[in-house]
Image: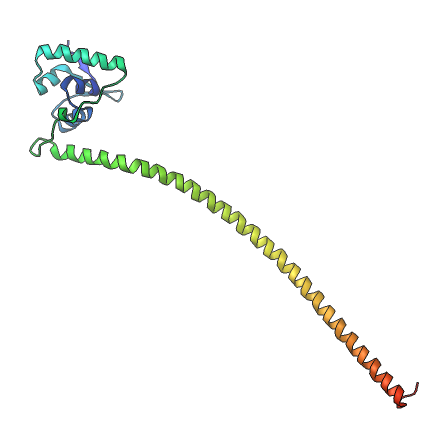
Length: 184
């Protein structure tokens, strides 16, 4: 019976990154079954691909068990990564996937920040809308007060004019009475 590894365990077993294992699966260099979202890769597939010798297999299995016990793989240095050569089958796909992953890693934080800013802007727009409605109400009330004040001013002016006319008439009447031109 063949042993099966996950993508992470296969990467540890072969001494490459998990992304390289996934790239090999996509490129068809490595066959795997996907069960419940997890790749299952037969040990024979990995042995055929990497030409792993039997005594290395035991060391890799113990390293894989250590990784599981520690809660995850340790990051290998960059020299352990396999370099994708342009003439390798599926190289363009692997390069495109790598570029897509890099682009996603840049864009995801920006999209998250944009969502936060959108919420802030929406809140500010609602506040501005409320303040605009309050301002319109205040202008309406002020307009009514201005109209009432203008009406009072007109009445006061008219009263002042009438009072001045009456005073002038009284003076004229007093002068006429003093000169004797008019008798009462």
